[in-house]
Structure formats: structure tokens, C-alpha cells
Image (cartoon, rainbow, N blue to C red; front, side):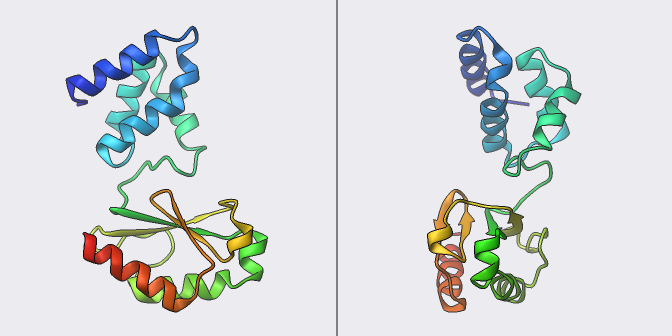
Length: 157
């Protein structure tokens, strides 16, 4: 259940617009930030706040790459697999990440620290190959740079 403060803040934002549904994505992200992902209960809470059905929320939630319908790690690594990143070494980057983290694309490490997900483009073709970790872009990447990034994040955890 959403904390009273968050629920009140979202309700206030929703009340301030003429068409509450236009805030659906913002509300989903706010609720996801609280829970870490958008659970079935969270979908119902979002729907209730916006006067929508859970199915209407679910339809949009499953459309967006950055809305997580299942638990994810503390650090979500989105690996760009656009044509430019692919030409600049995407496949070896994925292989290195999977080997280093001991997981496959779409999985989360057993300690809950990292989730590895594909993304079709992050818009950093000039820094290919690139990844996005919790909204921060890294690139161009080499295996050594990846190791440095992962070590730093593990040290912060």
C-alpha cells in the first residue's frame, strides 16, 4: 500500500490537470520508484488513483521498456542493441556482462544487485557501444570499462 504522503502528493498532481490519464506514465514511475517495480497491487493502486481499470494501466505498463512488471535488481543495466551499438561490439559486450555477472539477458543476479535487460536504443550512437544503468549512460565501452563500472557499483551497494 502506498504511503499516505505519496498517495496524497500524486492525488494532488492528478487533481491539478484537466485530463488525469495524461499523467499515467508519471504516476507509474512514481509508484515504481517507491516499490522498485510495478507489481499487480501497484497497477491497481495506479488505476484507482487515475480512475482507470487495472487492464488500462497494464496495457501501457507493458508497452514501456522502463516500467518493470517484475522485480529487478538495485542496478538495472539496459544494454543498447541498436544497429550502431551492434556494429560497434554489442555482442561481445553482452557476452562479457553475462560472464561477469553470471546471468543471462533478462535475469537478475542472486544477490539482487544487477538486472540485465536489452533496450532497442538509448540515443547515444556517438558513444557506442553503450549501456544505461539506472538512467546514467556509459560508453563507449570496453570489457575493462565495464569491469570498473561494476566494481564501483558493487562498492556502493
